[in-house]
Image (cartoon, rainbow, N blue to C red):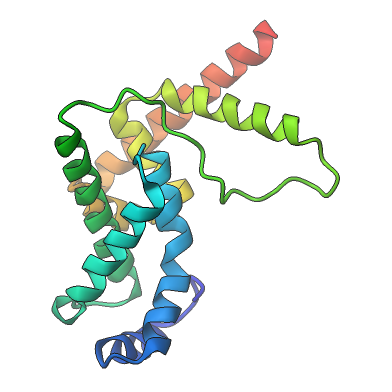
Length: 186
């Protein structure tokens, strides 16, 4: 399901899922799984595939309680994911010290490209993300990796849209500055 799908198409898929029709589940999962996995992986989940699966299971167990369209559904699923990440960190009993990783779902390079260059680029992106505050990183990942809009990101994080825009602006400014500084020192 693309971002251009209408709420009517979403409503049809939601109705299928609520009635137990596998087409509804399959199409909703296909639409949201990739950005969801990328988000939980980038946020440092130990078992990111398992956590993403748990989030989808939670969402589909509660799907009868959901109200809204496609935009609200994405925000609802990502709020479940955010809460699952918080729960995971609490269970571990300590703050995650690991640097978030860049999701492997990012587009592959051109055919025949050197894989060592890909690893180097991912490490560079991870280093840049590590320079952001946790709040900035979360907003950047939700907006860019998960593809959520400002309103959706605000709903997921419990912030106002203006605060999301400010965090994103500051994060991108910091990334630009750090990227420029690193490029100059090479």
